[in-house]
Image (cartoon, rainbow, N blue to C red; front, side):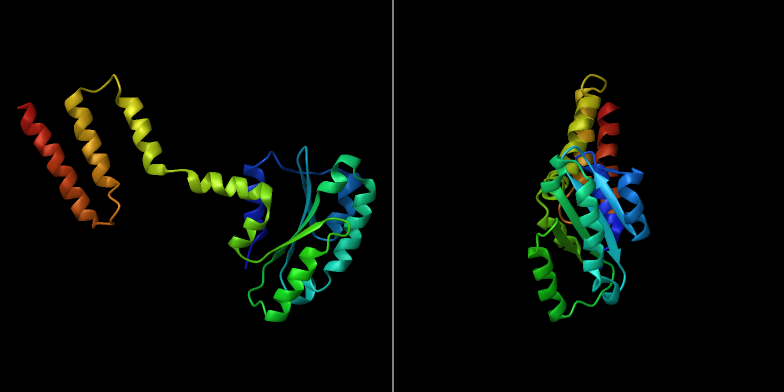
Length: 196
């Protein structure tokens, strides 16, 4: 199952997509529980289906998109997408083959069906956003920022202690919280003894 909120969040975070409220485009979409998102290059139509019966009527939704297609500027005509989000759990084998056929049908617009997170990988312009999120290394970024912060404000001895504490915190093997506290206290106590 997938929720429309997942797609909305990705669109907001990537490529400057925004939800359009232009009445000349939106009235038919609104009455059919569809949303129109756009940026300077693409138009995306989103619709969440909560039952198989509702999803089975997707061709009716495509006819609404056909009307939209006639109204949009020319530069969007080859960049019109229909994102169908399935918010029901059971996908029978028959439905999986139906999804495959629907996604291959490029009449009017490109169609993508989302039922689980891995389905997001089908979309080239979303893949870039997802890979940027995966490439982010929290540990490395945190250490870099602490290093910048402490660059001129902390003595070399305290810098070394701080780095040891950070290394203890980011140990790859997950160790017990008490072990982290003990090792951190060990480093701090060693530092206090060295100062005395």
